[in-house]
Image (cartoon, rainbow, N blue to C red; front, side):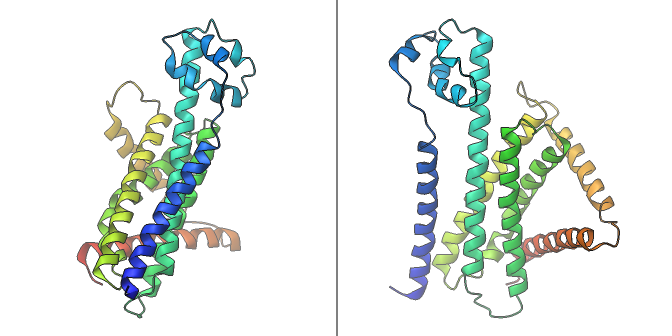
Length: 269
């Protein structure tokens, strides 16, 4: 096996390992219920029955006494379950982005030139995306996705994942062989598409648009414009160490994302 083939195999094994670990962590969270608890539920509420344990884990101690559960009770169970699934999706995005950032950092630069600066900027971008997923998962657990801050974090994650698809060829160019580059490109594409869907779902939940898709595009555009405007207004900070550090870190990541986008778009590597 050549050195390039070994690297390609390493990428595949790492991806499978991350997915397996995530699946095991989700399985450990499931709560087994007795048959009596299931029989107490209305027979048509199969979905609610499966999530009865989840309701109890969220603090509803009298959940086993829902044998006469009303529609409101079942809707509460379903809403909590949807929230939990979205949190798990955010956590999955966190692990995937963290894996991509780690792999991108460990891959030797095949050019061995000052492209290393662009490589580190790409790692910073994926690391920021992983941190954003973690923040949004916590916000979803506390029902705060409707806040302007978290709505714009979702839009930012959506934009990073969607627009960043064009930068994949450039980032995969660090691989030494065509096979490894193809595997890495495919993996990054799946990660970004997954994050695009999850961030859109989180933003949609934040604006409480459950009964249709009307005006979603216009609302997202409006949120993006307001968020961008306030971000640039926030660049004018006081000349203090902490404020300048945050501002300069933001500028570094923004230019790094832009650099990766342009190099991938025009294949400059």
